[in-house]
Image (cartoon, rainbow, N blue to C red):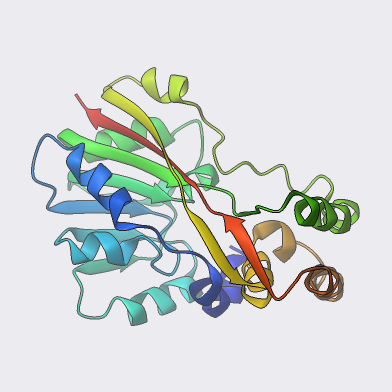
Length: 240
């Protein structure tokens, strides 16, 4: 629930997803994908891509401030935001697609698999994707790590993929499990990169003064432009 405090920055600095990811998700279906349920929609980083392909989306997001931005940027698209966490969502509808973009690690691991399969139509697709954004230059990566380590030690353990291919494959009711790595290398400004860091949960957990000082030190250590590795890991499965 800390992301709402930086909703506008989240929309500005967080990276979007490539069309090839949407192609892979829709291509994995054994039926037309007309309806979708998004878990942890944020401000729309994946929502808009699927909606533009004609998928009518129910977008779950627990933070009202994030939903305010989501509603603004998806005007005119078939997107229906619902302010609720995944665990409290109740519906008699069943969907052709259930997906989470860099949000599945925030769901309850004791119930999420059962809830996801229950909300899918037979043949519907479960898609989970996300990844870390890292500096490609090893020296810069190490320098930033030295700045982060004293203040973020013990906070950076939140893994964006706290599940495995094997775990997905063992979920009762899911078949056709696949894992894909989608390369994504970008050049961006140091200011944009530091802006992205400012929206990461580990930084949001810091006191404002400490957060600002840490980000200031990182920016001072970077050249004006940096290359970043923003590869995306995609897990796909179908409801049997």
